Length: 445
Image 1 (cartoon, helix red, strand yellow):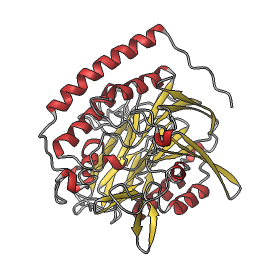
Image 2 (cartoon, one colour):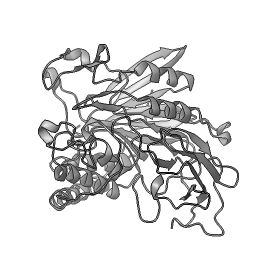
Image 3 (cartoon, rainbow, N blue to C red):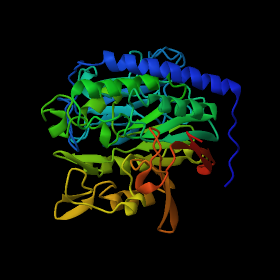
């Protein structure tokens, strides 16, 4: 496939230079200022749920927030056919923009809205005082019948027809390297990307560090998103799990932010779906952990949601093809592992025992179940990360090809096994429900 050349200019070079200087200054100030902050994040670890108090139902509405203030004005109509989910079940709003969602017993206690072709998410995927794309169920107001109430506004998306988006992975936010992530986001924006998907390992490392260090990394990542000129879909990776390497972190298992709770405090749901015009991104949390070891996997509750959200086709999209793209950190398949072999011993072991057999921990252990769901719902493209190398693979399942693209690392080039693997991201162009073209953008080229 051909791809239109990416254009550069003196204005771009100036913008990049300014962005880099601002990012470096910001990185050091945030790293110093963030130490010691502590908050009581939501409970729940790998594969566990946080039942939302006594609430068993959320009622509410999704409305067209024309002025972006998060409050519904008399002139602002409801948004029909918007997907709302508790990360288990899914419902769509009626013609008036109203919904009733019966909470599943396995719900992690969050609710989110996906958006529609015409109306976007309200806040660049970051919680704000004015509005947000998700809510903690326990924090919502209670109605007379004991339900919780959520009314959320969506501004016009401004996206229609074909678009470009960027797939990035492994920025590992750290004061010494954050400038590369800033440069990647600015380059993608300059090259016409409507949004970016970042498939995990967002922060340098939260696995084996104390709280103040991990908090600093997450704050740095958030600040970078706040300054970005395009929305960023963030997906958790193994390095975004806090404290589970307890021999190094010294963090107790009853710490309020232990495991995946620190990610949730800063960035919200670990798995969800997002809509940008003709594209639906289905963000999957593919890192699970047992005691002090992470591995690739998608738990049963998330698999229920995954199947439901892929099958929840908007009624109004019948005449307008939509490309569904699942994205995750630890990938479903990879060829990279064949370069290095396997080990079952030591701190860097690659195979871990799960039930009665060993599993290669750097791919999703139940990938077969996930791939069957992909086939059922006509998925054509799946994005991953983790290996710090760009990979492109194809499986033909039930007569249909599914393309698997694992992204290179933003943080730096990789030189494993004496081979040079470049750092960069992939820019995709989507038209008529398909990937029309793609191109790798080398950050050091």
